Length: 194
Image (tube, rainbow, N blue to C red; front, side):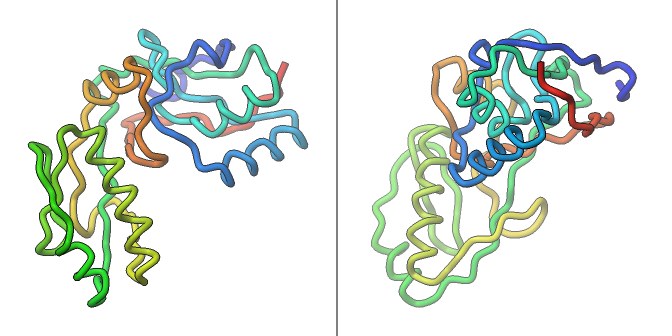
């Protein structure tokens, strides 16, 4: 699949199925940019389920602006040219952060480790929200986490079926949880809104 096989279409944003929450500041910046330019980079969606693969902030901004039809590129999410990766986290724990992590009681079947501290939860969904909460707490203690594509500790494994299941239940993962990669080119030109 290359850029030539991706066609532009327009859809009602309320019909699209998000799987991640949005960051208010990023969504507000997107909202301002859309208002000023009356254009947007199309959202990438699954042609079958209408899952939002890339573009949660754009979708939310255009919904808030009242657009009933927004530009999308529809692809086959199950195609092997689309993969789901995780954002690894690098963190240097200070003594206060270590005390905090050591004090946590952690049970469940889905686990990940921050340094020597094992963190568990009952589902991938709840594990990612626990990780989001931990990131915020550790930042308060002076141990900010840095996300990157290859180094640091690995959060729980994500795959397409888990993401679709979460979205179909009407739930959302924390912002910027999934990292989709593609073996094809997605056009990044802004499109005028209708």
